[in-house]
Image (cartoon, rainbow, N blue to C red; front, side, top):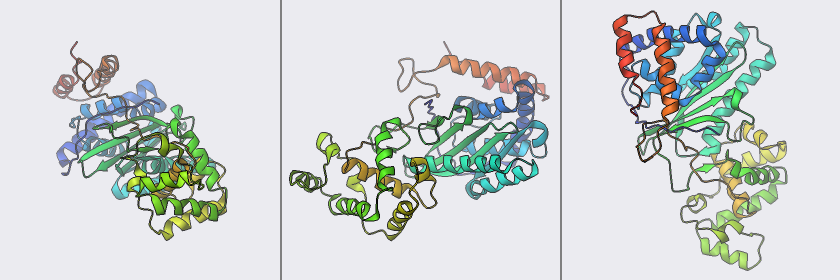
Length: 387
């Protein structure tokens, strides 16, 4: 899994109309040249790359470390190709807030207008919905998704750029997907995850990690059993989730609870200690629905309508605490493409990637039909990293 991290602070204002129109105009030129040079599939691939996406936003004059870069850049690109989508061979759906929820309808509309086979259109819609579910339910990192853009080419390549916010920390996190790199929609599918900081508290539930394989397997087996069995396990957590010593004593008494994972590591910050397992009729209805439908695999479990973070968390905690199947609590963000320090603190600088991206951008800008003075301003922003 390739990962990326950058520093984003939340922007509360609006992009000035003059700046947005400028970004649209320049975005149109950049898109035209890039597609002419590399083709629509490569353009989609580059938007899925966190480094390249961030650099494009900088070229279009937005602050490189602002959360608004994500929402404004995708909006500007969407507007810049409006009416030219067929000629360019790329299509941008979704956006921020309410617009993000219209993504499936926009994809379906393009499917009709392009006379795509129904199965192909449905598959694009499915991929859009699943990427949103993965980043909101499988990766429980404290960031609420509020922006979702789905970009696809006439040849079927697709990318997802979505962003979540953590209002308490006033920071944002961006998630990138690219179809060509995905072997499994639920197991480490990202091209990169960009965030301000990496949590070291081991309190981010990451059910997309390969380290959660066994946990996903047990969760699937649970919903393929019977309702009474699952609810008996949930009741154990309800009774003892706030009292670690009681849970260990139940192990000593030989009750069904094995507590393998609790017996071998520290759980002061474990989510089960803070989980509210009070009576939840909604959770019980969703679990009952899953057990009736009996999904074939974990992807089918996640894809079931109504399944969200709490259902995933409940099944994960039962699988880990009662059946000893560990889940990953490591923050999936690993590598930073922001300017790091010479001593690799807080992260190393990938000069090769940066310089290659900068050089490509400079060559593309050179071929755009824009004012020479404007080009000079962009060149100044696209400086190679210091050696």
